[in-house]
Image 1 (cartoon, rainbow, N blue to C red):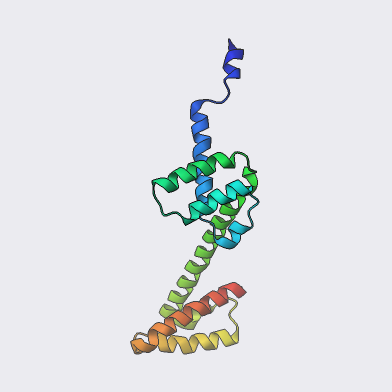
Image 2: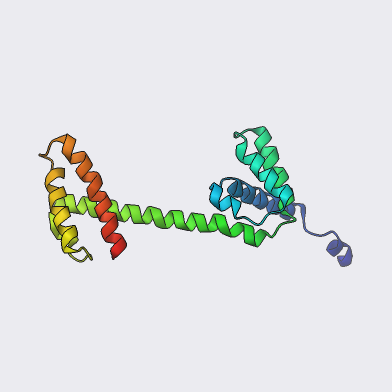
Length: 164
């Protein structure tokens, strides 16, 4: 009797889970930026199906196309294909963290002045630029000068964080 159970293969629930994971992978592959998409090692049929999905607006027909792609992905190297979306997600999180840190540094600069640069690897030139930008970004400065100065201060904060 136990041999009969083993012959049936995976349960319906596990097959559904696997297919949903393949659909999720198909969605993420369709959403890849063009340069990354071109580098994917795909069969011609799967690449054509993904390119068609990339051109489709979000609708029922696109959902059907994604389900078709999920079926086609069964014939592909799933491990190799799942790496690029994961790498992009990791890079996006790192990039977001870098921008948040730069925003925090800019806000510290605006609140406490050049003392916010203590403990960073800011060069003398960067400190001098910060000083000039802080003058222009101060609350008393005209808005026409303070907004661009705040933007430039943010770029400078990114530069300082990148060098350290």
